[in-house]
Length: 232
Image 1: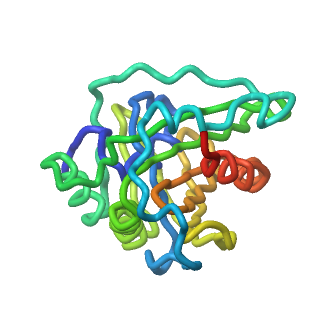
Image 2: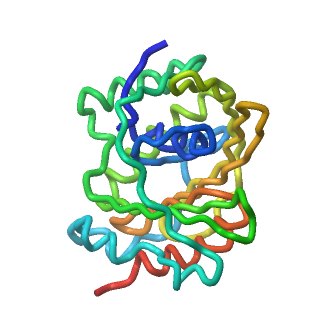
């Protein structure tokens, strides 16, 4: 078992599911599917050769309360903590964390994030991440994360004294953008069992990741992608 900080791109998904059990470190999310990291493809994007967007530009393209509709409240970003996550039973994820710590380039520096709660359900949340880099870097970076997670359909994650039993299951990715990935993450901790859906869409030099309650992800993915593509 190797310990590493939550800056690892691939462990952002773990922070998403640990939100109900106390993980508050800021991390970069990513997601996985069940049997292969090779995403679905569509035709080339007209923006594939444009320069990466700045983080400020990405922030302007995030969904907000008015985009989501009535009943949504934006959550404050949690303060950084020095707590480490630890993975048990998944060597590929441990290796991924080590690679990130040594600067292997999985972290995309141009990024933006927003998270929301939905008052229609006490446990419903949805979050959006936007990243920008060259199409090749985005595809290879998240593909490497998917490979690591897919190699371990079940494993455990610890954060402090909390132990979370994790599972992954492939989910059908919608035919959007240039490349698509989607998965369901199941976690059990403290007598609770929850499912988080994560869908990632690459469109040109932008990567859109929407995570949260499966119904909310399905409801807002199209508008997240449309706003991410907006030219200003």
